[in-house]
Image (cartoon, rainbow, N blue to C red; front, side, top):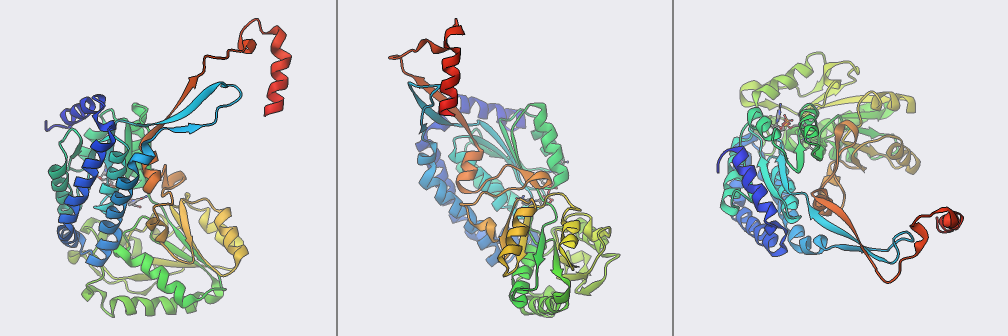
Length: 459
Ligand code: NAD
């Protein structure tokens, strides 16, 4: 059982056998997965370090720790979340007992990106498994060490007909997408998201697309700029700026821009020293292709800090750009690297013309002490999710759904929302037989007026 069609067909047989619907079966695998991951904790940090110099601290808080907490949540709640739910019957269905059955979709495909290569491969897998599905996972081909380790962990825990890891690049992904799945969960770029959506549409397969976009930070003049600089630079330079919800650019009230830039520069030096290349805490760009992509974004920019590039070492220093025009390279696409453009506004129209120049972002961050300003920004603009007075941290609460809107994605997950993503809500009514009013049966003429009155009374 080694080819993709062979693996999928074995998973189909297993799902039809009903075995994956047993809670004890799911819990056994979830617990075994947790044990295996815990036993490989150091290997995970080493693999991430080798792949793009990710510091152990960042690997713990943004990959290993989140995976373990998602596993704990799934193990604790899989039984409760899987139970059928009773809802009130309606006038139209009375007498009846009305239920929602939690049905796993079946055979799931998960395609993962490279930027949080462990977290974004394993987290969707956990909830897909907890809700009773089989999974084929394709980790990213760009983080060779982490992806190899993920495959090893999966092989050690699961028979291939339950969960299988299939490594490879575009060709493998294309072959996977050509199969008929019951659900596809994709995390990656907008352009590949469109390819996935097209392939899924061929079989009418439901999808969750966790994509990217240009996530803005909006700062007014009522706030503590030193603290804002600290929090934005943390969110921007964490993981080397290669975070889907990283602050992509700043829009700041024009009169406080210079002061903010001064604080940002200090902040970068405080965190990474005068030469960030020597810092143990600053990751590298994933590969040379991406270094060149970022380099070309810089070519028509006014660099006011950083800008150092070492292509061979995949290094780009934390870089600040002053006031780029909206049609410059850096403002065309998601940056996905340690470069922060700083734009300014004088009035609300300026903010609007920048934000609405782009598709709906995955995140938006607003920094202010003015309640009305905050409320206005949060409600006026459409975006996946965000934070008031900080960045990134909404990802860390698994009681909040995480996902995009419009071009930044569709669907969401994390915690119970992940479980629900991989679950079909099957509505079932059990009809009582002791009463059968003749109201709905023909001939209709006599009861029509009565039915209308009844509807108006109850609606
Ligand atoms: P990517 O789209 O290039 O690759 C993602 C996955 O798709 C990989 O497994 C890759 O092998 C596969 N793939 C690539 N090209 C393909 C093709 N032509 N056909 C089929 N499959 C293909 O993304 P990436 O570079 O790995 O990750 C960066 C992007 O992901 C950024 O845009 C980022 O914003 C986004 N992202 C989003 C989230 C989120 O949760 N919303 C999280 C992380 C990253």
